[in-house]
Length: 282
Image (tube, rainbow, N blue to C red):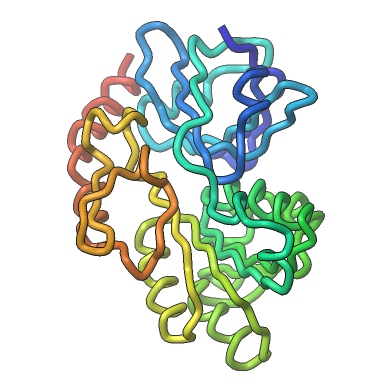
């Protein structure tokens, strides 16, 4: 059993929990994920690690209420327990293995969409601890859906806000803001990282390619069992079949077949809707 140390709602549909899991916390690295199970009958849910503290022995996860299982997770309270917390799983971000010399002179721009902002935070935090210049774009539909603002401000050099409706910051898509700060503002970067909805990562990749900017994307939203056994997260990368949970979740954005990935995301939509309906009528 894994105790929930704290819980807070970042928005009506997004909750953040700090969970006591010392072995996971001591081994965790940016870019990795874990699997939680709320009770012995619960579904295994893969969630990207949003922070970790080896000294405290805690890991932080952020969950958005989408279907029955995520609603079950968000219904848990501080002081309660998860039946299982397994991890860290997946490969760490590529920059974790780079030397200080290799990272010197690098300038990163992160494009974070919606709940994808949460797993961006530990990556930015890590890079800043290594002395790397990091800017961040956070995109959301409206200003009240922006999460991790203060946390991101504390670890990045420049934070840019983007909202679809213009309620705060740049009005429009994150791709438009990325193009603006590079072409109009003259900011120069050596590497981009995009984490968020699949459609956002697809167009962020197209924009980065237009700008001649290398980009890494995270395919964490494809994962189901997290071990490569189910095959749900298989996707074509550079013409080869890859499994996001064991060979990723991060890949070169230029190489990802996003259209295939989006079709795969919709494969279990009817089952998810049915499970959510059963959950609501209980």
